[in-house]
Image (cartoon, rainbow, N blue to C red):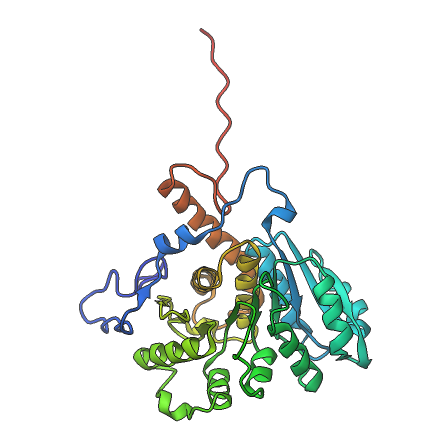
Length: 356
């Protein structure tokens, strides 16, 4: 560990020394995430569980130009504990992706043109697939077909519709839809960065400049996310330093991480996969978003300690997400009196009895 700043295993400002800049103030009503809060959110991992016990995630991601986004979502989801991950891609790309993903399976979606998903038959195939949560958006090809696919998926076909994470191209699709938040909608977590958030606010009839500085002003970030989550009736993760997690009922959580190393292409795809995996494991959207953001931040701090403030690759994060979850699981086991959660440390076998 270096001594230049607090690492993300405690609240910002812990261990400050004279001359350090003051820790940023939290938005009004915010709870700053820490190890204890995150550990309490971990889903249980029964010793006799199997891959079907730990959630089935469907990732609708990727295109020829953005194949990496889909692979990062799948790897992030696997390292966050999902039991089964299925990658759904246009059928003409299935041979390419099937050769790249190892642990995930693939599902071909019907096309009406090369790489162009045909929404109607694709929706039928998706709804017929057994899954506990969906991630949609990272790396998808922009266009009317993608927009229609997102629109139909967001409309809950029944009360038990699995939750969905909307990121990247899915968010850009939403920004072009009038009143997309109205009526019955499946539970969702939206994960925009400041630019995507501004487009969504414009599409909702607001002037983004009224929200203020959504990069450096945490109070403005918290207020804007509050208004958006209440209007859209969904959980909003406003990405950036000190990520904001807002619930529709006004609950607000802030991550303690300010890590420039995470300013690298693809890190948001890993976050989407992580939150999707936690939804698939049974966490409700606000809990999955908080835990996913915290695991992602811890993983970023681990990689930062190895490489510094620059040079982090998104593909560095998934392994550290698993290690971070294991660390939180050890904390949770101590707090819960040994009940197994997360990736807990297996008890040692009792020693052989010695001679009498």
